[in-house]
Length: 269
Image 1 (cartoon, rainbow, N blue to C red):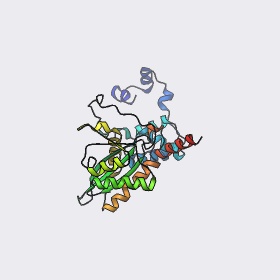
Image 2: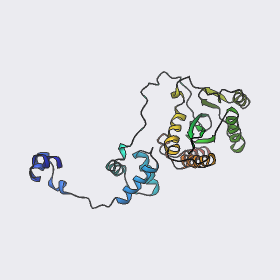
Image 3: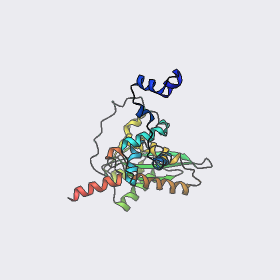
Image 4: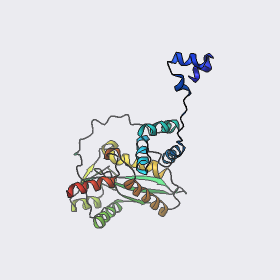
């Protein structure tokens, strides 16, 4: 309507007649004050840059905001948040990948991989990420400067002794840390099957690739690491938030901890 009135210099009555719109609707202005809700939506979007409209709406409902998804989406679009840069989609089809048995229980299948980043002075650091494929829980993130196969085994042993958790199968790529003799020996002694991806096929281990993307966008690209200890602290804080606060659409918009608790309750019944 605004373009029509300005371009052709006609009256509101004529414009509404041409657009088949009521003049009451054209002159209507909402009396609702959504400034607080808009400010909160922007805060969530700015601090959690990978969160879309649906996930932001779930967090709003958890915080007690009485708002439906349509209003959240309207404010989300009006604020221009839907124009944020997104990661490019992969155009290579994955239909020829090997079929793997789907995980049906916690600790049935884990995925592991490495993520690299820098400290403020350019010094390189690496992070070993471990994710449970069924519950989407981030089991551990080990941060160091020169992680090797012995360090991977050390993380597995710590999880075994402190939490009593050993997976049945581990999906990894063909990195030297995962195909090392010390890792092979640990897997044999603990009855763990090492499931390696095909060379050059990151889509074979999609769960850990997706998790690493979230870790980089929501943590590594956001924080400035002053030291290795600072990196360990901030990454561990993000891991706790990921497990306890971040909803997952694949888990029916529940966090990994909520999903695991629901499984335990259903098993107790």
